Image 1 (cartoon, one colour):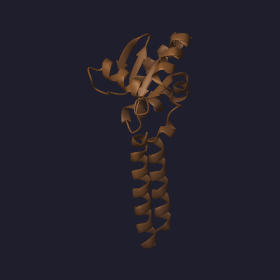
Image 2 (cartoon, helix red, strand yellow):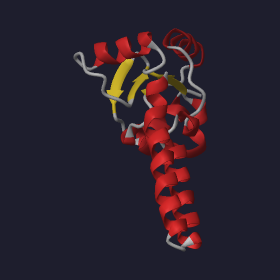
Image 3 (cartoon, one colour):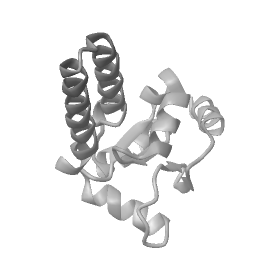
Image 4 (cartoon, helix red, strand yellow):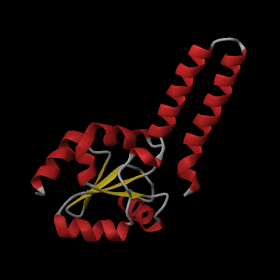
Amino acid sequence: MMRAWILPTLLLVCGSLVTAALVVRGSPAAATALLLLFVLLAGLHSPLAFPRSVGAVEAQRRSDADGRPVVYWRAGCKYCLRLRIRLGRSARQLHWVDIWRDPMGAATVRAANGGDETVPTVVVAGRPHVNPDPEWLRGQLTASR
């Protein structure tokens, strides 16, 4: 669970150090702008940018009931972030599993990817798809309704 917060924490610490240096040099406006940028980057790379994760077993149960895809992801993954941003509000309709929090989810991803933890891995109707196109995935959502 702590792994997911390493990158956001490092971004905040580095941003704070750079901001402090700029304030000491007499550039409070630049320091404020830079600090806001680092906070934004930390937020985007944290688990907070994603819909609430559930366990792999629960996600599979929900997917069986409503036909919606299951997305296996991890914090700090730029491809997961790209998928999340490009899906927009549609992302909340998916079942998200954080593989760093759920060992069963990580095992599912490794089984689908020949032992690698390649994310995002999306399971639609029992078939895994690695790093799918967000438009294709949005189409799968409308097909599952």
